[in-house]
Amino acid sequence: MSACLRPSLLPAPPPAPTWRSSLLFGVSSFSRKLITRASSTTSTTTMSDAAARELKEGIAEFYDESSSLWEDIWGDHMHHGFYEPDSSVSVSDHRAAQVRMIEETLRFAGVSEDPTKRPKNVVDVGCGIGGSSRYLAKKFGAKCQGITLSPVQAQRANALAAARGLADKVSFQVGDALQQPFPDGQFDLVWSMESGEHMPDKSKFVSELARVTAPAGTIIIVTWCHRDLAPSEESLQPWEQELLKKICDAYYLPAWCSTADYVKLLQSLSLEDIKAEDWSQNVAPFWPAVIHSALTWKGFTSLLRTGKLSILCCWNLYVISYNYLDISAKRLNITSWIS
Image (cartoon, rainbow, N blue to C red):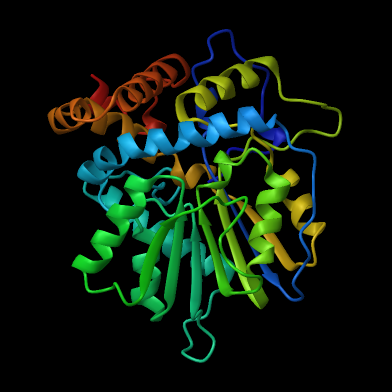
């Protein structure tokens, strides 16, 4: 589900940019096993310390305000659903698709369900309200710890764990993915489900994931990426940069990178069995569903109960989609609710 469709699939931009977001929205899934734990590496930060602090505060405030809205409409999980390409999807299937995303991610990474090999200690980096952690704890009987920048999310995640009898298995705290509050080599499964796109320093992010992973452990990153550049390209096309800026402004995201950039970062560490996969088409039906949910009466009334950041985000998402999606495109399955 990655935002990086292959360059060979990209025609010249049409006069009316009606299809671009279908090329750029999405998630790339990465998996790698840590055979020997790598020492942390230092990279050049892509923004000033002041800008990074402002970004971090903005992310925390955004999720403090918007998490209750997302939970009210979508439930436990704050990530994409996974669908078969070009499938016809009913509204009731979207929550099930979010669970499929977890299962497909585990399958892709080759995480064993064998009681002697399955993960026992898991960290959920960018845990939201703890949906993945609770799912993994129940599935594997593992101990899970989650970190988020949002105090509201951490509090809600702990409350949900207690309500579902999992307080002895999962716990959540406010923590920075770039400075994780854990010792070296603590976790045999390091899980990052759609949080990497918020990281201003991708190299430090990946290094921290590797630092907390136990020898022979597995790191899984599912994250938003832009497409890989062609050998003749030095940057994305201006129209692509313009679209990504709109997305970044709406969701408190720093600069994006490509799948290839992530692979290079992973290769620079002592990691083995690195693999990546493009899941763009597998998540395409989810974006229209998110927009649709905001246009329902339940979505509207829930939105009014949140803060101005959530309202602004939903408005920006609608504007982006109106300008860049082909509203009548049957391949995105949106004609039924937009008309």
